[in-house]
Image 1 (tube, chains in turn blue, purple, cyan, orange):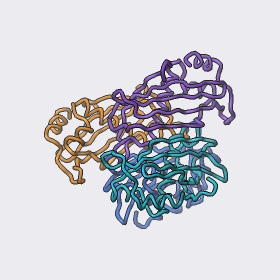
Image 2 (tube, chains in turn cyan, orange, blue, green):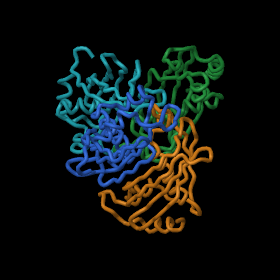
Image 3 (cartoon, chains in turn orange, green, cyan, yellow):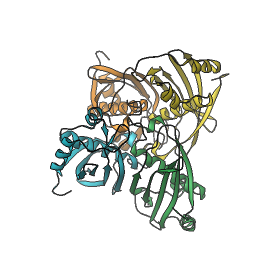
Image 4 (cartoon, chains in turn blue, yellow, brown, green):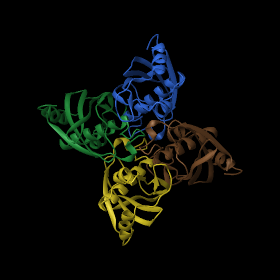
Length: 136
Length: 136
Length: 136
Length: 136
């Protein structure tokens, strides 16, 4: 993530997020990734919500990877650092680090493809593409 | 639930459903209730899916109540017994018992109102209403 | 909730929280209630985490009720107002209002009983009880 | 997955699992993976629950990957085919395919490391290791 522009967001781990091993359940890191990329876009002046409502475009995940290094625990205010790894007309890749107390708990990526409401792959809107390329 | 027609469905508690107290998280009983009423409808020859896709009607919950008596635990194959408590043109109330090993873990109800895709309250389809009234 | 001391907390509705009706799934309001009571306790100088780790006490929910008036939607920053309705040595009742844009989306309560790690009902710690009674 | 012994399990997609794009939310595939590996172990005569309760061993996920090809939708009875890709004293890798109607919706893997209740990495119990190696 060096030299890359990133956005930091925060999430307080709920009891709901834990499992009986006393740690955040492994699927819930993907919710924190979602939070991260939503805030990343918001900082750039775009929101998923607008993209969906105004442009009719959604960004389904086509691939995801997570490496878990240490568990997030109940009530911890964890940080997710989101950065853009790649952006093209038909593809966006976000990278994430989930941190607590200066150590990395997990990292990973999500790859997205823009589709319209009929599920057809479409180009990213030019305005969004330009802004994303700038922060790459 | 005496003397009422009920439908039994089964759910295996996932690790995902537990929390760090070692029991099923309290919100997840509502997912099991959802499973129960979906199967109740299916047994009657209707599905939520069809109701939504063919009739354009959904049944949002307007009220819910749960009494928790004993916890459901990881890997238990719990039973949800669903029955219909009340049905009118503009209202359905389902009752549920969640059981394991012959004891009741939790019970409760959900009240639903039929609405169309614009969110306007509409009458339940006559065919569904008739079938529901028969099993009341 | 008039004349009662309440604590306001905030939650941004995730895509993860929505369902295909385009609204927050009905079980997820209970997660927002959880957030509300955790923040209520934190403001009073206690945390669930400490109660669990230091006193060996957890507060399982024995009863819950929700009235849904209007849906919470994706990306909305909703508010949960939490207040204490009742507190005794062996019982706590919290009340909640979930609001957005000055209107109440949902309200409800949760009733809790203090238990130790063996699941036996125990008295609330005196220090916590006193503080809670003060804000009642 | 050719020539490998696999176990098939089934999951009915709940409304709870969907998001406002009308498909199963991307994190929930990991719950279906969990279901798959639990059933895989059960077929071999072991359960996660026993491993945890009798041996004091849990199998946290240290890495996960998912490729999403087509969405799972509400009420679909999806199949998860689980197979073992690798097993060593200190590592297990499961592979999964999620299918519906003879097509693959998603596939991926999870890598696990056996740890004891103190979080220390330990050897897999010999009996389990032997059985797993046989089906490899």
